[in-house]
Length: 189
Image 1: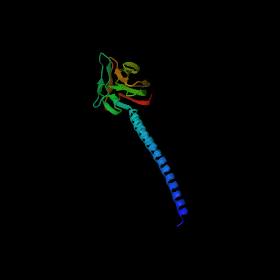
Image 2: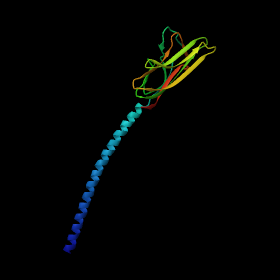
Image 3: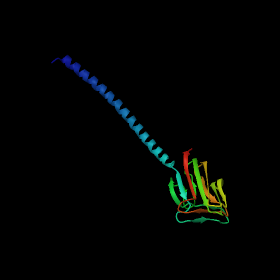
Image 4: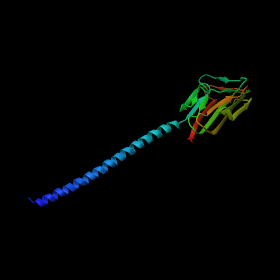
């Protein structure tokens, strides 16, 4: 047995072990950094998923949930309450009050339709926080009257949208939902 050769082998093994230990230390540090990066990424994904859910806002509703009939005429303006809800993603429309409440700041689109029979006067306005934004009107049509309007508005969180029947006018609706109100978030701000 050659002592010098064995000593050289031992020295080479010690150097290799030292390099392996250094490599292992580097790998463990990189692994810890990657774990931290993965955890941060998972947290960001969860946050973005929750934020994205808040951005899903859309509703559509017809005036009468069943049957047929007219609303009005009465001596004062009246908020129309659309009780036949087709969709209410984000639950921002309240079918008990007829009011849509913006859950987040953004740009929204609203449209409404109104229907009346011949010989009647129909007038409906779209209101933002109680202020008229646009309206539809039909004065005693010869046959049934229909009118619609739509608008793009920037809303703050908490702004309220509704439609209002003018005093001494009326609208008609039945199972076909001729009189309806819809809106959706185009994009958040």
